[in-house]
Image (spheres, rainbow, N blue to C red):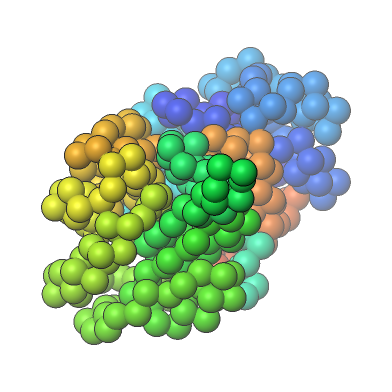
Length: 366
């Protein structure tokens, strides 16, 4: 089986689907790897590093796609990328099929078997394939650094001859993978951390990392597979009322709340921003899905009512080498589960295959 990797063309994307290390491991397993020239340069992986790992370097994405059996990508393919893919090949990528129906239709029209890395089931034997978590971990870390660099205050308490500087207060919305990493990072930098999550079972995790859990009764929340699937307007209203007083004393706020396949819930209204301190910072990690703050702007940093609001949509890309290494390991585990060097197993009723296969043989499956 021949695995292809092309250079990501999406704006602000620096990651690559496979690292030289994973290429080497695939080749040990009997696969072949074809890499587009320069595919890894924004992740600091040279063409020579891929060659040394055993890959074949070709000049264009079209040449890569013409010669591979499965194409590995980070982002859902653009129209120009789909146009050079061979009919009947396989694709492994983040696809977010529920919000990209046109992309799925275009892939299906070419009989492409598309696997979505954002649809990996949350089961123990799929943990090594969990690309959402590997990327969210890095995003949570980077969000804290952006918040710290955007703030006019230091995070730790500092005792000087001129007096004591009190620590910054960081409020984090959401205690998923990104939120938990943000808690740990902010605490290591010396901040006081408060955390809100509508899932009461996260309280223990938050407190184990040194965060203070903000309690409230979530009521009508629907949770499926560990993810919040739906939040009622009454719950959001109640949450906003409780959190307004916490935001008023916050120096940095990090929001991580997402609902799979749907617009992100608005947790911070303009009125709440008006209550915040001048010079405070909001890092909205949900900005690509509409934002948890209603004043966030995609891929922009804006100042509204004296509050700096950072809307960076692709935080893992800012840590491109580590993000690519983690994603490549997820791909390695996933593809070795799905296939051997001789081809795909096509175990259609197997849980991981069934959960991730979006379209196959001219049929859209989900």
